[in-house]
Amino acid sequence: MKKYDLIIIGGGPAGTPVAMEYAKLNPEKKVLLVDKNGELGGECLFEGCIPSKIMKEISQTSKSWEEIKNFKKEILQKRSKAAKENLPKNVELLKANATFFASHAIEIDNEIYEFEKCVIGVGSKPNIPNYAGNGVDKIWTNVDFFKNMQLPKTLSIIGTGAIAIEFTQILADLGVKINLFSRSNTILKKIDNDAKQLVLENLKKHPNINLIFEANIKEINFENQFEIIYTQNNQTKTIYCDKVLSAIGRSANISNLNLEKAEIKYDKHGIITNKHLQTSNPNVYANGDVVSGFPAFAHTAFYGAHIIAQNLFLNHNFFEIDFDKNSWVLFSNPNIATSGISELEANKRGLDIIIDKYNFNIDAKAQITHTDNGFLKFIVEKKSLKVIGVVIVHQEANQIAGEAALIVSNQMKLKDIISTIHPHPTLSESFSNLSKQMMGKWMMQKLKNPIIETLLEMERNI
Image 1: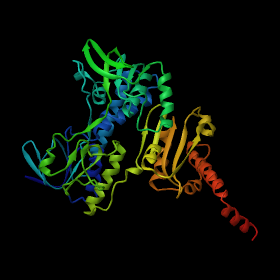
Image 2: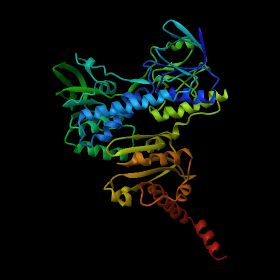
Image 3: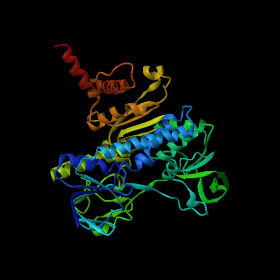
Image 4: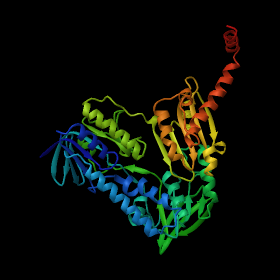
């Protein structure tokens, strides 16, 4: 039996940062990092956020598909190699499938590995739709697409979440004819209506995109090409295409872990943890989208990894997660960037808020760069004037999303942002412009109070 101070299952953004941070803080400790592929980076690097952004970055250029494929391969190899080279010396990387053997041990190829502490960061997998027809088992997911890197002439995409929208717009710009299927009459159901409207308008205008709303897919068959049978407006319809890609959500990779043997509780959404990301087994933590209710973003997993590493180092659960500070970017056209609580969520919670927007059509930098569509929106707690949510809709929203994250994470108030001197002309000065706009309206409202008017008049006469 081999013994380790810390065993981490999963070499993606939920696992690798824990190994690196903990090992550097504890150079005398033995750390084992187990990954089924023996690589570092997880799906984000190899089949997710990185390759999709590579495609988006150069989809507007004159580069050929082969050049795009080669560039993707080059970037992925560079990042994976660098991650391995930067592993501390006390971290052992093992290519294997791990399963729990007991509350303090895992099993790999009939060999037992005992641990003091363990972290599960094995991520999630794409859901495969359960339709009738002989073509279902030939449907692509994002994993299949990036593994094959084939560019079909026609592609049907099922789903209208973040992955579906990014794939639709990127591939349509690369010349692929897209059929986008939605069971509802809109897209991006978890995003504020005003934020997704510009994206929806661009989808409708794109010559290579065919939006199929309120469609209920019944059957998918394949013989030389795909046949999709669906109902819409009480009519049965059929469409044909070269490939089909499913983007209808993800499921936690927990089926082969034997969690029961380690006394780890879970539900249909993943492993159950407390606010410290500790499981029902106090010696085992879980991080990333293997966790029930965890936002499925690589950067949020990095955030969780830091919390776990620090708590392990202190040997005490001092730090805890706060997903109300989470931020993310949809690399659509235009980008949608959010931080904190959305307007939808704030209303759902019954919070007393004020909301206002700064339109980029009056912004100097946006006018100069011919990107004056979109807006910046603040969701502000009415009593404290603290910014609890930010939404940015703009072609370059990803470039200023970090400031939105800092504002929310540090619980900044409107006056704090106003006192920040932003350079001009930049998109970032929109934050202070909106803050001044909202503070001005708030002050005008306050001045309508007779008591405030009297106090001000007394102050002037002193």
